[in-house]
Amino acid sequence: MLGLGKSRKEKGGTTVLTMMDQKLDADAGHAIDLRAFIRCAVVADPQMTCEQVMRLFERHADSECIVVCEDERVPCGLVMRDKLIRRLGSRFGASLYSDKPISRLMDDRPIVADAAMPLQELLDLALGRAESTLYDCVIVVDGARLAGILTVADLLGLSKLHQQQAAVAKQRIIRRMERLMADIDGAVTKVQQAGMHGEALSQSMSELTRTGREALVDADRAFDALAERMAVQRERIAELQQRAEAIDSVSALIKRLADQCNLLAVNASIEAARAGGHGRGFGVVADEIRMLAAETKRSAGEIAEMIGAIRASVQETAEQFMAGIRVSESSRSAIGRAGEAFERIFAAAADNHGTAREINAKAQAACEMAGRVAAEIRELADGFRSSDEIGRPGETNSAVAASK
Picture 1 (cartoon, rainbow, N blue to C red):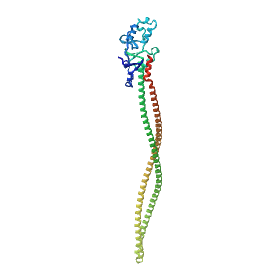
Picture 2 (cartoon, helix red, strand yellow):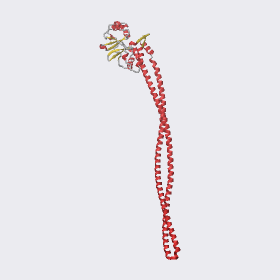
Picture 3 (cartoon, rainbow, N blue to C red):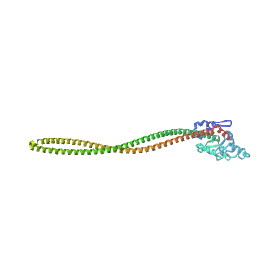
Picture 4 (cartoon, rainbow, N blue to C red):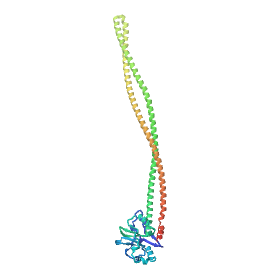
């Protein structure tokens, strides 16, 4: 008829809560429902006499209490067997109370708990009673109607079950924390490895950046030397152009002189012809001079043509040289910008190297801290396992036996 009452066994005066032991594993991790543990209560009317209630106890020898209910099974009081026996067994007790209604001797302010009340709240309420009522039964109602009772033994058994359930929950939490700490430790280790790898990469990047910066400095110096050589070559090209112009001027002068000599030779030939036989030798000389002047003029023309070709080549060389200078200056400007970029990269690499080193140090500290936390969790778990021994059945049974 009762959930817990059917599973009770008496052995040597000690109550063994077999159902609670059987339900421990099944109920672990779930809220405990009081309805599964309440006992069926013996009910009395408020107008019944104390003698009638005593006979009711005699008919229900295993009942520790009787619940006094008004109409519709609404509890209004509680009568404990041992207290009623002491009152009626005292001097003049039977003569004073036997024919009086039980409402005169009942506890009209018993603990009444709703079946939906959380177990911890019920235990706090029951164990917080005064010593005179500490071992009284607890009335359980469903709504306002009587649902049953819980004895002190039941409360102690529920307390044990609650402690064991809490211990299981603690162990679950600890295992979950251990798994989380293992995950955290793995993650921290990965971060540490990544930090070390990042630090090594940052160091390599700094070295490469430094090497690149030094190469740019060397290239800039090479461009300085090239610029100096190109300046000298530009001066020499300008000097060559001036000399070519001077040669061209000399060639023009030779050509003019050849023209004059040719004119003089023609005049001399005319005068030799006029002189007749006496001027024949002079005419021969004049012809030779005229041919020499013509040859000189032709040679001067050839020289002028060669000088023109040389001037054109020099001009083309000068233009190409100036184009090379412009390209060189543009390249030098690009190298300057690249150098500035390398300076920024070097600064960023140095900063990144410092950050990676700091991350590595913090990851190492986090790894050590995770190890300490894991050790503390293991120590806490060992403490919980030791404290779980408090809720062993022998200790609870001893407490129950002491309450009888």
